[in-house]
Image (cartoon, rainbow, N blue to C red; front, side, top):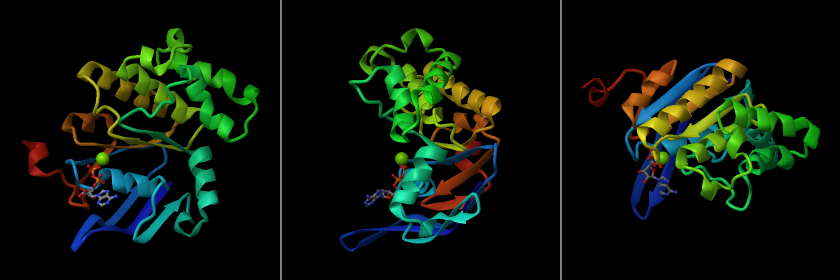
Amino acid sequence: MLKAENLKKIYHMGDVVVPAVNDVYLEVEPGEIMCIMGKSGSGKSTLLHILGLIDSPTSGKVYFKNQDVSKFSESKRAKIRLAQMGFVFQEYALLPELTALENVYLPARMLGRWPSEYEERAVTLLESIGLIERMHHHPRELSGGQQQRVAIARAMVNKPEIIFADEPTANLDSTSGKQVMQALTWLNKQFGTTILFVSHDADDQKYANRVVHLYDGRLSESAGEEYNA
Ligand SMILES: Nc1ncnc2c1ncn2[C@@H]1O[C@H](COP(=O)(O)OP(=O)(O)O)[C@@H](O)[C@H]1O
Ligand SMILES: [Mg+2]
């Protein structure tokens, strides 16, 4: 599904060289829920953005469905992001002037789909994650957990093959966070959508089929001490 080879992302801050992602090899299998666990500043967002084709690595390769997407033009990468990938961010990133339902429509409209192709699906998605009564509300009228579930429905509207989630529960209380992770795992079971999420909260490991750990931009399969404690 998704493969990274020898990925590096180097930032230069004056004279200081920051290897945000360093020699990362990674393979995500279709249908799995994979978690990348790491402390703040370990490179999780940088790595997720590179894998989700939002950002480009300094060196190394990303393969999506066996295609070397590092070579693709930006417009081709944008099309893959919109049609085959879904994104969930820590801060929800909903448009405030649109209702929940209209926010869910958005990626389908951007792809130029006909309303008949997405309207019913959008409602069904909101219903399946417990938001049918809120679908005509604006983001400011929704709790953080509800907004994040709208963002998840939005990420699903174009039937993506993979969802990337960047600390989806970091701004939420534990009950809302649990509902958000349950919504993601339910969608994975229901539609077989592959999920790659990153987190700094060791409790989130239980939602994943596989967990890898990031330390200063380097990946390791085995759990570190702070997570075993
Ligand atoms: N645009 C940038 N310019 C310079 N340094 C950056 C930039 N983005 C991230 N970094 C640095 O790269 C490292 C990894 O950041 P990030 O991927 O945001 O980590 P995480 O998501 O795990 O908190 C940090 O040291 C951060 O300061
Ligand atoms: Mg981050």
